[in-house]
Structure formats: C-alpha cells, structure tokens
Image (cartoon, rainbow over all chains, first blue to last red; front, side):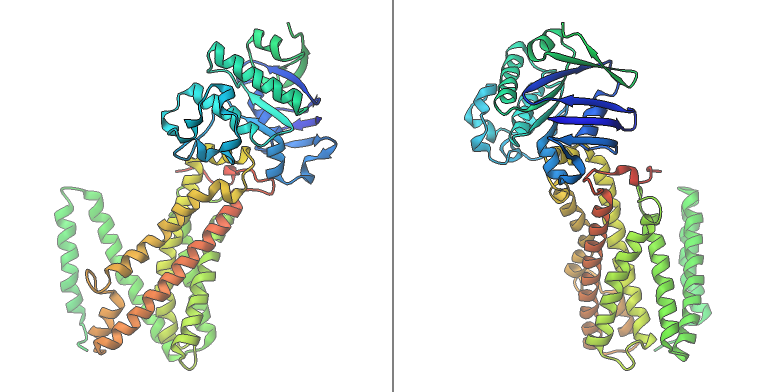
Length: 198
Length: 264
C-alpha cells in the first residue's frame, strides 16, 4: 500500500492519496494539470515535500535506488540509450517478450529502428523487470493500436493481481478506465477529487 | 645567452602590428582583440618578471606560498569563466579551484621534494615555473571537463533520468558521460606527449636550450614535466568529475540541473 500525505512540488500543493494493493486507480485531468509532475514527485525524481510511505515505511528510510525499483514510474515517452534492445534489460532471458507480441530475436534489435509503439511496449516490459510494488503509469497505451493496447492491459492487470501491486494509471480513454479501474481520480486546479468511473 | 634589447622586442612587435593592420579590412574587431592581447602579454610578463626578480632575491616560503595562491585564484576564475553552464554559488568557483589545488599543488610538491630534491625545496626558481606549468595545463583539462560535464548532463537529462527511474545508481546513470568527459580532459596532454619531439619542440625545453643548457639535460627536464603535467591534469580532471557529479545529484539521487546557471 502506498500512502501519500500533503505532497507539494513545483506546481502541486497538498495532495493526498492512497493506493491499495492489487488495485488500480485511474488518474485524469487536462494536459498541463500536473499529472506527470505528481507521478514524478511520488517516484522522488523532482524536489518535493510531504510524507510518502510504502507499506508504512517512509520514503526517506529507503535507499533512493531501491525506492524507484519498488515505486516504478513509467514515463509517457521512454528513453533508450544503448544500441540494442537487450542491453536495456538486466536479465533479457527472463523477460516475457512474447506476451506483448515480440519474438525471441527482439533483444538483438537496433533501438533506432523501433517504432514508437514498439518502444512503448518494450518500456512496459522493462519497468516490470524490477518487480515493482507500485506502478505509476503515464499513458502506457497512448501510441498503441487496439490489439497491442489489449495485450498491454492484460499483462499489467495480471501483474497487479498476481503480485498484489498498487497502480496509479494516467489515461483519458473512458473505455480503458472502465476496463482497468474501479476508482478514478481527477486532477483539477491542483486538487485531486474522486470521480465516477463510468 | 644573447640578451634582447627593447629594440629587438619592438621588431618582433612589428609583426603583430602588421597582422592587426592586415586584418582591419577582413575583421576589424579581431584587430582590436589582437592588440589588447599583445599589450596584455607585454605588461603581464613584465610584471611577473619583476615579481620573480624580487622573489628570487628574498626566497622566503611565505612569498612563494602567496604567489602560488594568487596564481591558483586566477586559474580558478579562468576555469569558471570558461563554463557555459556553471554551478551556481561558490560551487562554480570552488569545484575548479579545489580540483586544481589538489592536483597541481600535490604534484608540484612531489616534484620539488622527491624528484628534484632541491635545497630548500621551495626555491622559487624551481617552484614557481613548475607550478605555473602545472596550473596552466591542469586548468585546461579541468575547464574542458567541467564544461563538458555540465553541458552533457543538461543535454542528456532525459536519458539520465530514464536510468534513475529504473533504479540505477548515480554512477550507473552518468557512466557514459563521465567516460567521455574524462577522455576530453586527458586528450590535450595525450596529444602533446604523442607529438613531442616530432611535430613540436616543447616550450620549456626550447627555452633551456636557448639559454645554453645541454640538449640532453633540457630533454630530461622536459620528459619529467610532461609526466608531471599528465599526472596533474589527469588527477585534476578526476577530482573535478568527482565533485561535479556529487553536486549534480542530491541525497535522494535526483538530477539537480537547477544547481546550474542558465547558458548565456
């Protein structure tokens, strides 16, 4: 369980929320409302104040590298720095690439040849490799076609249920919200409020 | 050794004047810069000549130390001035100056006390030129390295943060940049050592030979200086990288580009 109390950063003030195990909460809000800022602040990537706890342990008591593996932020646009796909994974052999429609050769693929959709699907696999307790997903299916979207949703939902992970999922698609979440938060005027799922 | 008269120097100066006049039509501003730089060279070198003359007459350790610190202070300012994005506050000056102090001063002490073994070790005739050469070269290495470090960190912010997001440590997140920066700091001295004696006759050796020293003795000094400079520049670059990387990240391993000034 992830608890956020009175979180403030550059554009947000006094945000509180709770993410329970094995549950997905969707987050929406107009562009520029600070959704990305909120996710980055929880992952402790930007300066921020407030109390953030994972299973009752405050963030400051946990090594920052370990924190980000546990509380994983998946940005809307992924970055790839090495030549081949495989170099971006710690143990490429253990990654279920086939679940998102890749064959075993994908580790040898050149990163510069990847399409935006392929990058996005691989980024999901990359972030899951750390076996995080909390997922902070920033529009994980924005560039994907219907089939890929379905595969990514299935994989993520399965992970969340099996590993009892908590998840905050930024999305605008009403149908996706209905499929993945029972709770929905709306970020408006730097305030979080509960909204209807449907 | 043949002493140069003021007239001899004016003859050499004619060359600069002729160049300034010729460049007037192509690039008028450069003629001004050239003249100012030439005048600065004449004044600064005359002054240091007088200072050294006095210093050689009173070779007290206090005076040697004071002049050394003054040289360090000016070199630190120079390193700071060459950064496009410098660390804000005292860090901008401190990281460069501290790295130069650590490397140049310790290498100079090592050379004076252990390698040369002069009595007393702070004899200004040895200490000041040696430190000057070390500082000058270390300054180049450190200025290049810091400039490259801060500009690369700014340009590659997304990649560094992408690694941090995946739980990489700060050393892992910045490893490739650090490697490039270290190379940048060391390339000038590596090139100088590789070309020495074939393409270029280094200045110090040339000076000693002009002053009448036997070429083989001058060469031995030059070899020592080359090794000292590579040690000084290398360890100075390492120190600057160490402090620079420390300052780029905070205790929660966030990349803190807000600690850099805006590019001007």
